[in-house]
Length: 281
Length: 309
Image (cartoon, rainbow over all chains, first blue to last red; front, side):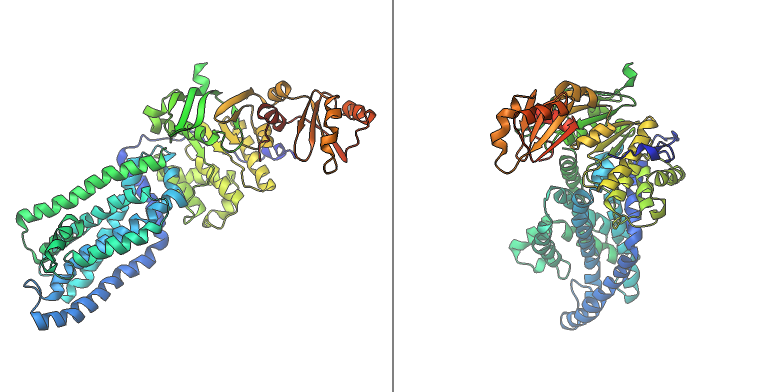
């Protein structure tokens, strides 16, 4: 056994002088969690921002101008609107769902199992709710940003009927969170990532196709329509379309908001429980 | 005097369903001590550390850390602890210094304060030259030093180290031990788990030996060796299949003999005397080594098994 003590005398100290440790508020602690995620995004934002601009262009070209020209020529539009104006608000809500899926599955599992950053965070004064809330807040901001970019790109094509379309941004964020929050909880319960591709194929894809995004829910067979109404996406799509056309949705709007809010609220309780069980056992 | 007690556990228990990982242990750690939990894998060391780190609720018993109850004051206790877990838990996509910056913010340190501390900690962890590099390609030893640096960002009163050198090569271990000595000298209380007896002997002022969730012995490394082992040990190796034949003769000259698959351990006050006595009885091993007793011998005596299977 060698004697490492020989080098100790010259080594710098790891003991820091007691610095000012400010009493932190919950807001500051959530902000610190968000700051961590922003540092991670600093490494990847260039790639993702290109995608944020490219994806609306692809949709506009294929759906609006390609399929739309055909639909408008044959049927004179959908639900009294040119197809472009029908479909783009729906795609806004759908994109929010897809982004939520991307940020709430593999990413969450990674923070739990792969780099275990959630555990590292919970070794500090942070609480489960703050770790969860900070990460979800960053997901919400990402969805809001992507939706705003979509608006910016699609507006010059005449995809929106009214300035009220600006409300489609908070609607998209709420729609996205109606998926993200429960998905955080689900991801915290999964042992391997193999379930995510099944989830995508058998839940996300049907929702994307059958939630009134590309054609009205009323076109579906009667037995399928309730499925659309109990899942969040169709409510986001309807609200987004109302905002885009500047239509007051009335009491139905309150129902849409209530369903989305319920997914967020119940999802939060489940996610908080799943995180606590997984990370603090 | 009670102010100096940083960790106090009485009858501390942790169960997962039917399995009892920690079975009613009593522990007391005072300020400035380097305290160790020594035991094989599965002895309950990590479960104990998680309870002490306030990230795992105790199933039973009483636990006080810094005079507070983890069930009530978890965040307040964690604000004053440093935790170096068994896995490094670094964000490998971030750079070395970014890992320290973001972590300091979790403790409510201002941005300026965190940056000032980062410079000192990188110096301490010998990572200043790698500060802008991503963490992912760093060596195991560097990642572990970064994890320790990160655990020090809040200037903790107690540093918890769960198997700090497991998986590191011998040189990286010595570098790490050197850093830990330094911390100990600067007054940081260290609580260490390990299944390496040399690590426990090097670092710990006092330790408990754990097995199957229980504490089977407690004391300084010296006390444990004096109590549970003899001053010296003679290791005898025989040709294949010959060991069996000599056991009886060897038993006649020693306080205690342990039979391992590949050798006999002969516990005695004076190894050379014992060797001479064996020679007189016609025992001719292939090789004979006289050495001092270690904690490994203590563990073997207490549990009948070696530490690292």
